[in-house]
Length: 244
Length: 264
Image (cartoon, rainbow over all chains, first blue to last red):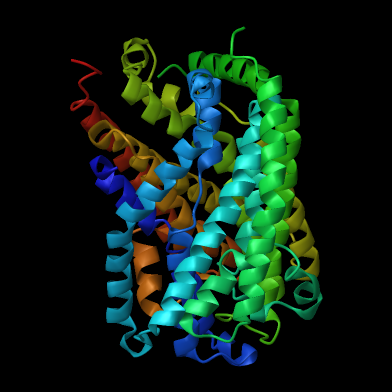
């Protein structure tokens, strides 16, 4: 992983959309209408950036490539589910990304010195846990989509479809508190706000329901995992190596 | 340059790539739904910004929709032509197949930029046009010949700038080999093209007009739509577009000098 340092740095930079959004929010004083102070909002978006950095998943793209190239066949013979391989790759890259994310945070604080804060240890641990749970949810969703490769070969377009609601509803571009009431009434039943909004609120010290959020995250993992198991066993039965 | 020959070659490109893309019909349907959802999503985001404010950066909601429309059209063009072709450069260089292109008796930039086409982007372009038509109605814009010419000029300039940016980044592959992520950076920068430039702080505005001219790409055509744009801005956009187009071509030939095939 360390071989591709520039790659990973660029990847970290490409996640800066939350900062552009922050700029729109504060530059037009939009935060007043949702009753969040400028400082709290900038912390929120910084945390959203962090959560995104450590929960981003691309397993469907790797899996699609491997399955089209026929690399899945040798993996299947091994006594370990190939998704563990991708899981380990994701974890390794998250660790290498950590220093770059810190550098970006450092620059953020230079430009916004008033938003420096130190979350207490308990909150920090809880938000690391919830970020990891968010990563697990996304990893499971994408693995389920990736398994569709067994049927359609081009599963990445389905992933791009699912990415749209993730982008707009997860809280990456606007905190879920700011959403109109007709969306807020149902959004907390979907997995989306627990992907970024919940961990980011937790870490930044904005108001959030800690117990409720964590239990919803765990609930979604328990719902998605059996689904993944099912689709995986169905898919491998269906699988015929490319060209056979 | 023999124009007729190039047109003929392009017709062949269109034919082959359409044929291969239409193999994946459900894919196109999924892409259509993605485009529609993505437009709904960005209008939803815009409505959040406007829910308690009448103006953002001096733009009303109805006016900001024009920017969305133009962004959608440009994004459609990116998905139809730039994205499928220019990401291919990375592959050509990594696998050494660029040699075959350079050997062909045809302009290499032409070949590399227009070889493929992704028809699902057309739907996005159409969506953008419908949104623009809707905007023309709700903003009560009166159509005239000079208005249409100006729109056409500014939008084509935007397309040229966008193309040059993509081409620049893809060309750097010759040195860096893997530039997938550089393309991601460009994508995320382009994302701000969905919003009026004036809604950003001064420093970002400067950055996005001088270093990466995203400001020119959507904001100026939208101003033209509203009849707000001064003529010097339009002139400036034409100059920026031609500078970008020429330098990107020069840059390509400069980069080719450093190209030393795979495994040699």
